[in-house]
Image (cartoon, rainbow, N blue to C red):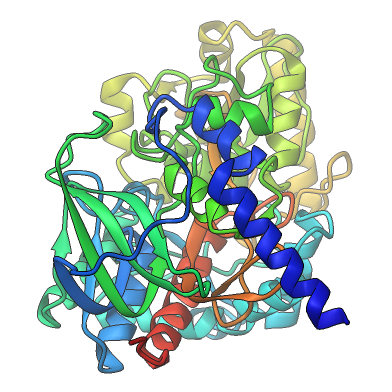
Length: 513
């Protein structure tokens, strides 16, 4: 009787989606100007003749998609990657270049006591307990292995761990070029060596699912001109084994993100590249994928309001002001939050002050900041011979700032932050060595924690927690791993870990006939 009810539910659900498209999916399509507003959402028809055929079709060319492509190809599958933008890499290639790993050789060298369990606990604490435990633990357990995998591909990292907000210990590798390109370029090189085609300007129009529920291929627009909906030439690609969705998040899709959180409207800037929109997520929802925590959208507290997009000022905040300096509210000249708290806590605190915060570091603190000269040339970061000069520029009370810095320095000397509990670095020193540096800080939309539900094998699950045959997902387009707040540098680890898993498992899928 149970089986009969489940089958009836399945048939009813399919019939509804064929005729109406589902309320949630239909609302999302109507809301976003980048989607085809008149596109019907009936189940895609399987073509009698395909234009191309491969074993595995991968949608997206960032960390996750490239990792999946490498593993699937090395497992013996034929693979193609499709990318809607003119250049590969998506957000990954402009990412900050930080990757978290627990129990790495670099930690051992620096005598940092860490473990997968501790990393998991940090993730769950930041995620407010909304993390799906099996996924979060899978990421933590394979984090060190994922870092080593990128090193084997040719990624180069600085010879030190970075301690980011919300992490109990320093566990983040930092690329030598201070950018995610330091990981993406070696991945692209390997993809090319393996002979995997990467088709740029190729827009996913439809994931093709048969009446038996099996995903069997995709319909795309080749020679697509972003963001011109419907541009290009329609083409079908058969996926003999599986389709892997690795298309990233929807931070730049203002209509869709406003559906999830109306406060994050067009007045809130984003660090993401222009193509970070939600049409692939909507398409996955049309296939009955289970949406997880879509309304949890993260703002980055290290963003400079004087730059567009990600910019480069975040390097000053992450490497100097937060770990070795202070962040103050100009109205009071006082610290108002632990500079190494998780991203949500800091972003919320900045917004609550009602004005751009100011990140401050001294000459000792900026020793590790990449591209500092460029920041100074652009006026993003400003340099002063005295704290009074900095206070005057940023319209902070001189007396208040002096008092704040004096109290902070006393805490550094004692080894304990008495007010906010900030964990001081082993090499932390008082904020006293001129010149001094300052930068405005205001949050930008950075990461969408929610997405489609997957299992530990990166298989996409439907509303009934059943695997959608032939359908995988990895990276930011998935949900449940990070919960309410993603810790800095864990996104790269997430993409590499689950991208590799998706690629390996997709290559093992039994071909359909």
